[in-house]
Image 1 (cartoon, helix red, strand yellow):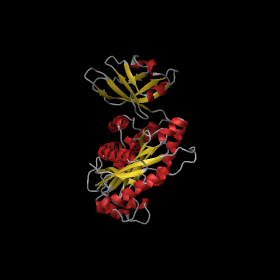
Image 2 (tube, rainbow, N blue to C red; image 1 turned 90 degrees about the horizontal axis):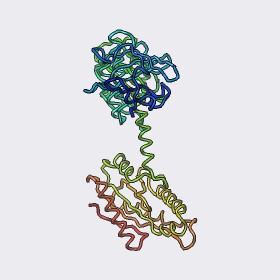
Image 3 (cartoon, rainbow, N blue to C red; image 1 turned 120 degrees about the vertical axis):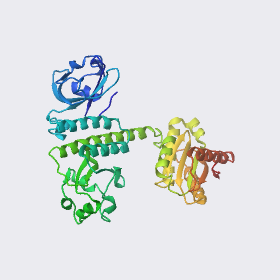
Image 4 (cartoon, helix red, strand yellow; image 1 turned 30 degrees about the vertical axis):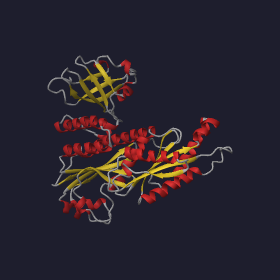
Length: 442
């Protein structure tokens, strides 16, 4: 299914019969796919200009007809056409209350510049609908904004857990940035509106306590246009265009910047939501802990490359099968949840914990040395092996633990480390359980 936020997409064959639509179109015309697919395009869309011939790729106004009879003014443009004559059409709502109309007032004017900018928005909308990462969205925004405004440079900054960071493009101010001052883009984020700087002196009007004009002049920047990236009331980042020459901005510059950054923000918000859903699906249903694949992703993101030794601790529960057999799976699941909580309490915040399945758990931690790793593994063992008040007399659960450590100068391969820790854990279990065995990384 075609996907794109706040932009309708329609695919037609060479006979202008609809072959596919995205959810936005279905919402606008208030119907289901079966009522649209296979119908002629003119059933739902009245065009002022044809979608073929020399003007095929130029945007034009049209009317979209809902099943209920309600009509919606739109702007359409042919996005692409294949060798068989099939086309994909982008459709934008330009009714007075639509986001598109509010974000780009006057862009539907018949001037060539207005049409060019509208085409930029239509093409960018398709691009933002296809991005699959925050970095891709930021790179696309930087590229589109640079071409749309003929900017000397563009930087895109995104908010993250550590503040605001450069995500794409080039920031010519960075080498001359005042020491200790908040990062580039923070002023635009906090203000929540487009900032237009016509001269270096005007830059001083937007900051307090810093001669930003000196920074502009040192970087050779004469003018700038900065727009926050907002989605559903939340500011996710900022886009800044820099100009190494004096620049005047027409009345369409601010709406165009708002429209582009809003498109990018919607793409970033979608990617983040998809990532949240993906990660949620990669958690164990019983304990809520990450799965093996997610553990490996988190290790790659947070621990690898730090230069410190890395330890993998593999934990297998002794006596868990007896709990399952005698008390049932509900009691076994409750025990697994308790073990997960104990393990989380035994390790540090930065350590990565996951469930591998059955009664096996894993901890990955950056450590000082192999002695530190062995001590951490033994603390894990002692925590798991504490008595469980909910278990009847005669039932106990302990832990067989295997641990391997690789030096910070090595390039660890997670699969090999996990296998080595698993072998060490098996040796601990064969030796009677409730103990730690130190293995060798291979």
